[in-house]
Image (cartoon, rainbow, N blue to C red; front, side):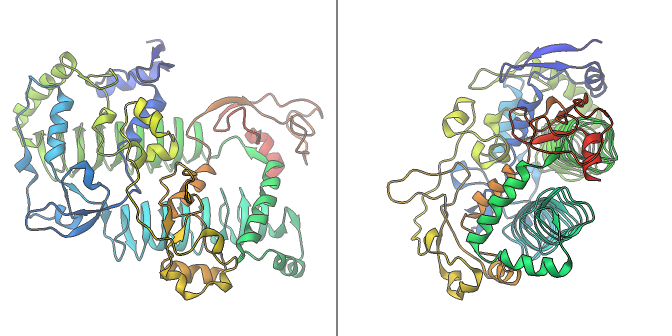
Length: 601
């Protein structure tokens, strides 16, 4: 079958369905999508709340205690304390119902969703880590999300196997680290990005295996570098005293100087490590993947996938999934599964469609919260024969009586859930983090929006009055309600669209960490800090571009090459083209793999 052009029924743009795509859809027996890849990604994201937490009363019978929940009170959704939810004290089958062929499928699922209790948070095997969500095996952690097996980590997202750190985004095996983005295997690394195996360093970009380096880029195996210049050990020790990172004003000065170095540095078009036929960014040990982002280890034959991996195979439109899974489609948070379609939070299961938070099960259609069950539809038990006879009839019904949302978009079998069925508002979800919208834009696109809850804070410490240096901070700061620098004062309007909490507090373990690391008190609330870290990463998009190496220097004349390149002639422009997350209008200097390695390795 030849490739075909389709018009996205959501945004109206043209997208292509390739021959291998048709083969995949035929294999899993679904029709081709009617939404483009980016709109499909945003639609899934609009169902995932990782970081918005509220206080809510438990709805379990005999319980009325206040809990931390990802569901706000105004949603009128039932929620059980997650420990009670996982117990045998209640039965998910009690909410089951017959399929109604006179009502659109998605309307029926919504009706089940509206009465079914959800776990307040997803926080498995947590020890003294109550204020966490989408976490497993956290110990003494605070406000971390989408993370696994961490100890004493605070204010972080997408972190694994890390200790005694704070304010990290996408981190792996880090310790005593602060304000890092996409860094791994590092110790005492601060304010850095895309660096690996670095020690006792700060303000690094794309540096590997470096020690005692400061405000530098593209270093490999270096020691005692400042602003990309080498020093002796003694010179470094003396020079580094000028940059007292315990002072907030000094940190801002260094940040500005570091940005100038970044502006004059080259950037690798993509980070693809030990990959074959992979197009995307931050992918390792994978092959035959397209539009793949932040993928680790052994992913094969997959498209439009991000966050996850670990031997995932033959999957499309997947987010935060893997660990041996295969044949996943338009799904997120699926682990150790096979043939999971249009679903989320499904573990150790097989052949599950249009379901949520099901575990150790197989042959489910439109179910919620089932564990170790088989042949169920809308949480009602069937025999194998009854199930196999009914599911094709439901699919036919979905096509003959499709669901139409408020924007006139049509949902037949083969579409993920309509955004208006999400239990969260757009700005409560990760969709707002990666594809930010204003309230007006979100509503125009058919999403709901949650206005900030009334916060009757009495701010006791204005941003401008925070001591500049950590050594001058007294213990009584733990009692202060601190103004976020983005928060409006008086008649001012809000300064950001980043879920700003307007005020925040410093907790004891945070103050202890900042003092030990000689780091200043932050000026932004945790939400605003999180958004600043996300802004440091490239978007989950690709653009076709040409290498900017022009022989002896970059095409814009800013970077001077240090070595001869494969295209030889001094003034010859490199002919290599590629797909990259750097948009053409961005100022960064982007080199192909060959030219980059000639300069860096």
